[in-house]
Each structure stands twice: as C-alpha cells, then as structure tokens.
Amino acid sequence: MRRLLRHRDARIYISGQGLSVIGDSALWLAMGIWVKILTGSNSAAGLTFFAFVCGCLTAPASGVLVDRLRRRPLLITVNLATAGLVCLLLLVAGRGQVWLIYLVMFCYGVANTLTASAQMALLPALVPGDLLGEANSALQMASKGLRVVTPLLGAGLLAWIGPQPVIGLDAGTFMVAAGTVLALRLREQRPAPAASHWRAEVSAGIRHAVATPALRRPLIACVLAAIVFGFFETVPFAVVGSGLHRSPEFLGVLTSLQGVGAVAGGVLAGPVMRRSSESALIAGGLAACAASALLLITAVLPLVLVASAALGVCIIWVNVGANTLIQRRTPDFLLGRVDAAMNVAVTVPQAGSIALGAALIAVVNYRLLLVAMAVVLAASAGYLAARRDRPGALDGGFART
Image (tube, rainbow, N blue to C red):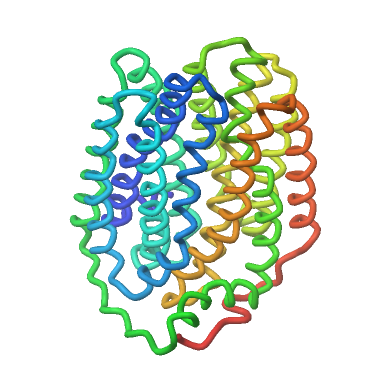
C-alpha cells in the first residue's frame, strides 16, 4: 500500500474519487430520509433507492461508451454534468415534488454506471498489475470508509437546516472529482473504432463473462444474492422505527458504522486475496452479509450496531474482489463492457428486490424478510466457496470486437 501511495497519479486519483463520495453518500441517505419525512412512508423512502437502481440498468450502453471513448475526458464530463443534475433537487418544495427526487435519483444512477465503469477501466492504466488489488482496496476504503462521517453529516444537515446544504455539498464534490481527474498525467490513446454490429458491441461484455469460468461463478453467486440484497434499502427503516423505536435520522448512525466495517474490510481485503483468491474474498463478503441480516433480527442495539459494521465488510469485500477479478481476467478493450454487463446482471434482480421489499414491508414483518435474506445470502456464499478458481488469466477470452 505504501508503494501504491508513492505513485503520483494513483495518489491523486484515489484521493479525488474518495472525496467525491463525501457528497454521494450524504445525498444518498438524505434523499431517502427526506422522502420519509415528506411522505411518512417506508415504501416511498425505499423507492428512492429503486429509482437510482433503475438508472443503473443503462449499464450496457454505458459500457460501450467507456470502451469507445477515452476514459479520462469521459470521467471529467460526467462529473461536471452530474454536479448540475443534483442542483435540480433545489426545486423540491414539498410532497408534491417527490417525483422530482425520483427523477434525479434515476439520472444519478445513469451517471453512476458511466463513472463506475470508466473508473474501473481506467485503473489498470494508472497502476502496475501487481498493485490492482491494493488500488481497489484503497478506493473502496476511501469511499466506504468516509461513511463513518458522511451519513451523519447528511442526516444531521437535513434535520438541522434542510436538504439544501446536502445538495450543495454533493455538487461541489463532483467538481472536485472532475478536477483531480484533469490533474492526472495519464495520456490515453484513442480507442479503435467499432468493428461489429451494435448488438454484438453491447453483448460482448456478458458473452465474455459467461465464457470465462472465473467470472461466471462469482456472477451466478452475486445474482443469487441480489435477489434479496435490495431489501437492505427498505428493511433498515423498519429496524430503526419498529425494532429500535428511534427516529428515521438514526439510520445515519447505522450507515456510519458501515464505514467502520468498510475500513476494517479494506485493510484485510488485500491479504485475504493474496492468501486465497478474489472469489474467496467475494464469498467471505456474502457470508458477512448473511450474518448481518441475522443480527438485525434481534433489534438489540449493540447487535444491530455490529450488524451494520458487518454489512460494511460485506460491501467492500464483494466490490474489491469483483473489480480485481474483472480487471485481471478481461482484456483492456472489453473492460468497460464486462464491468457494465456484470453490474446490470446484478442490478436487474436487485432493482426487483428493492421494489418487492418496499411492497412487502407494508404487509410482512421485517424479521421474516431478514430470515429470507440470511438464507439466500448464505446459500450464495456457500455456492461460491465450494468452487475453487484455477490459476490463469483471460481464460475463455474473446477476439477483439
């Protein structure tokens, strides 16, 4: 990690992208809480995250753009455009404009797919291959670790002053992210023009993932987990309100503890991958997620706090393992499309589970939902842990398209 941080471009890139998350995570939680305050509905609050995830379904088109455009100027442009987008939230004046929050969150999801794929594809050009695991861990720690303070900041500003400071903070951090990418010394070559029909272009990412066993197995496990993972966007509102009998703003405390877990998970992610594999790291993250669901059932405050930290470990281990695996098993000209394909394959069932969770929470006890989540997540972790990766890179790869 010290060697990584001595690398100028890597240091600037990681710090800039990490700082941009200050606004992201503050806005993400604040919008859900704001909708809950405006409507009084857990389901309406959960649909805030559903709108975001629906925007992420544009990932296949985003992947093609990432592979056909230079990634550095693309990141700069998207960050600046998103800074202007979030300012539309300043027009929301009451319950009648909740639809505008949903619309902005949908567009936020579209922008997120572009930046996530471009960031992931740009990283191998910035750092040596043997530092990819550490670079992904550092990015995840910088982003998820800031959840120690940013959810409390977002929820606190919302409760104290209102949503305007949170919106302004998010717009400002997008400007910072654009500036740090502009400061990189990296010079990219212009990508080769498309050599096949647009349908083949869009489907190339998923075809590569399915044809590569080392990618296919984690993909199946993550799709299985996504069937219930979206419940985490709605169930915590019930845990806080019905289980702990606290106000919606207390969710900021739980989300902050995810940041604590993310820091711990980021410190351990590199050593775990070196001693096992990227797939083992993903399986460990899914197991931690199942454990957190079981602990949330208790509605005992100390155990709920531990569950929130375990969820932070889950998120960072799954993200670091998946990103590193994609980067090491995919040729550069396919990186954007493979990342987008893997994301959309997980996002589709996750979007459905967010909508289902928002509906079920109104008629089913949240503890039953947590039991179902724990069972499915444990099954996905077991499936992945039972299958060992064979060494090798780019097995099942595609010809250039």
